Image (tube, rainbow, N blue to C red; front, top):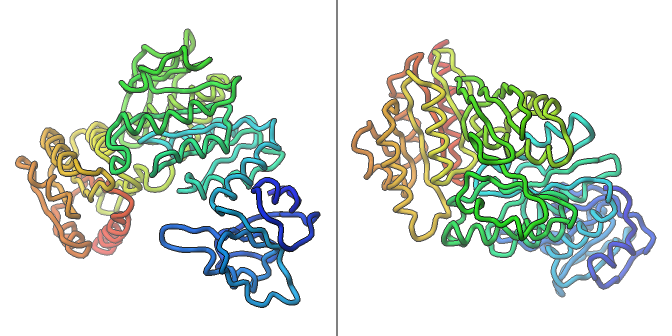
Length: 467
């Protein structure tokens, strides 16, 4: 964070200035009293499972330069002789967003890209970052810093030498994307797809779209939007409502598309086409769905004036984030694929389809956990996933964990099925599997199932067994 005076912070958050030097430089902010450093400003955030106001005393003791709080009965302890600046606001989460919005406005030369969608957000973000970085310094939000707390903290890390910033935007409640897009006021917006995510809140794909499309409405007047033309809902977005739309899709029918897609075990080859121009791409990540992610990123880069040669270099040097089709090969030759960062019905089908296509002639074993936040129709979505798996000829066995995967089990009548009540039992099933050099194990579940732990333990077991 570049210097931001306290008087400007107070104005940005519409706060009540109680104590402090208005000309004090605010150099960085924190919401975690455990890691706060001397001189940082502490925002006492109220979350679902914690309340930062309970840790104001600790922040003061660690010599925070200032405290932004909202609760009347907050305990500041006895800060003498190090009195922090104190600002009271109505809502600390909103205040953090307001500060980020005011801070971001200082960087008019930085092109901001906002990105959302049900699947592929993070991978698309990282591919786009790889492309844009070939020309100038580019930043993006990390990990799950894509909500009303994480995104503002990411924005506050902007600096004058950053020319491009790509921000992934997630949502778990109505109105969240609108709040985030109001902070960013992006020059470009991307929606990767509309799928079965957060249905507990949004009820249907149409409900998901209603939330996601608010990003499009927040784009700067001279900006552009990027949409998936293969998505039946996004395809209906009218060009009359937005000044410039760049579409992407498989096999034509869009501004940017792919042809001659070839899926291999360790890479994916395709021809990237834009109008009359085209270029060969070798992408070092598997999966047809990752071609679509690359097309989304390429479309945004084209809108920003990048050449196909620059885009090729960015895609081909891209390294996928952890737990997104992350692959290791054990000494015994078995291939383990960790795609357990998140899961919903469409992403499970994409992952299974990708592995089956990439590893033709191999024995595919699926290790699946519950798909969470699907709402009242969760049973149907899990059962339909089982029916889909039934139709995959090279899926040999299916290993399940979680209450909802019992419905996947109900649908599986053509596969070897093992359902575990806990992680220990699941690991035992995997240890007893018939494993050879043609064995592939795909791990896929919602993040809350922590399936990556089993992935790591199973790999360790295979390594020790073959020493």
